[in-house]
Amino acid sequence: MPPYPRPPRPLAGLGNPATAETARREADALGMVRRAIARQDVLLAFQPVISPHHPGAPAFQEGLIRILDETGRIIPAQHFITAIEATDLGREIDCLALEMGFYSLSRDPALRLSINMSARSIEHPRWRRTLQQGLAADLTAGERLILEISESSVLLMPGAVATLMTDLQPAGISFALDDFGAGYTLLRHLRDFLFDILKIDGQFIHGIADNRDNQVLTGALIDIARHFEMLTVAEGVECGADADHLARIGIDGMQGHYYGAATLTPPWELGQSAANVRV
Image 1 (cartoon, helix red, strand yellow):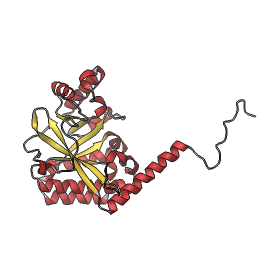
Image 2: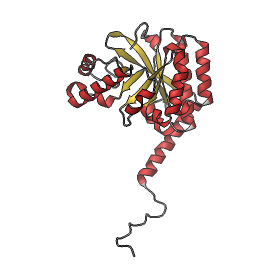
Image 3: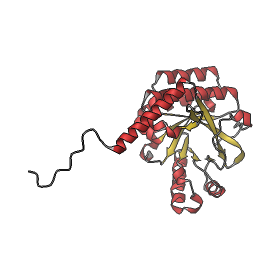
């Protein structure tokens, strides 16, 4: 007999309620995305990134994937991307985002556009084919395309990401490290990559005008980016006070509701191309 009481045995068939609820939500998300793709209810929303030095026009636009559910509601990526990221649906969504990105670039020769992707898609045959076809169809597309890869995704396949950058940067394609500081750390790996843009996660940006800790952390990230010759973009800028502080400490670009929420109306219909403006 053990010197301590055994924990009670779980009742047969019950399992962990939290785990069961997570599994149900993931299954719902997978089904919702699968049905949206079948109906071709997948589209891009556009959100501007603004340079404090040229506030009158976007430096570039971020193309954010959206789906429509059966009722026509717009579903942002944060409601399904975690559930699909490691599945074939994740690869299909990345391919569709890239296809729509190239279509947008073809519609507006002044547009500079960033598109999100997972490192898992790098070796996917359809994603590679879409990239090659898009670059071949428009010789200016490469220098106007930015590929955004999240910090967590880079750490899954660092070798593949580094090789992709080496292969594509001669074509003019830029790379942005997305959500930097959101829970992982690439500080010791930054010298091994060739990122052009570092996007600082909104948790460091919200309320920065009055938060000394966030001021110090964001200032340090800007200094690190400068050392590695990367431009910086602050995500989640929500008010003028935060924008003013970020401009003073040398941020290169800002993105958030203060400058404009994501919209399904293409920038060429709003007159918001990024002609001659760069972070």
